[in-house]
Image (cartoon, rainbow, N blue to C red):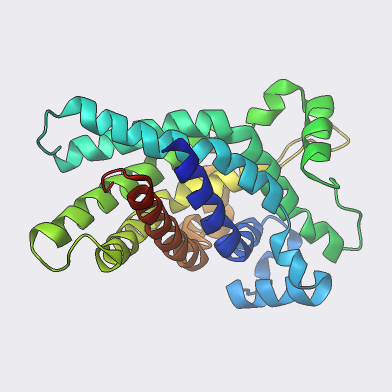
Length: 289
């Protein structure tokens, strides 16, 4: 199950990564002096392709794939084991599913946070190219090495608190909603346990996860991207400080920056992941999730 979850996650990540990159750039928009310039996902993606070529849309893919070697198997298999241990042949209530999903997401994110940090830093590096500057990192392992040298081992877990918050909310919405929606579709005979049921459930879980997690995702992205200036100063002292400054400078709506590309990514990501994972489970002789 761990292997099947990893493969399915890497297929889904590769498919939807350009949307994730666009979302990250949108969330960072507003930290620079260009805050007044209106932008959207299409303009950001177009600018990336124009300046760096189509491969620029895959900047930071390697740490993203590395992250999913740990993050997705832990949360998916962890949730399934929690679900089976908390019930004896019956079905869990929605609140119990939500709590199980949230807790499995927290554990998974604590393990995978360094890879997530590298991914965000490498995605953000594209902005430096636009300003005619050299990117901070040449690759995944170069980024890990430089972060450890300049910020210590603890630097790999920078932004871990908003990261864990986001993971709790995402998995609470995603896993519980997918589980509940799929069984609702099957129980009410809207569809059999097939690709149609999996698609409907993944769409609902994607919307739920995005709505719950977007503010924490914005804070997480900004906290992870910041590094100390030559004078030793940082923009945000902690995640709460980042939240307050973002709302004060850019308004409450800034917490949902990147909502559309986030949902546009989570929807296809979950569709590709869940359809692949369910199919792989079937081939391997496991029961449906």
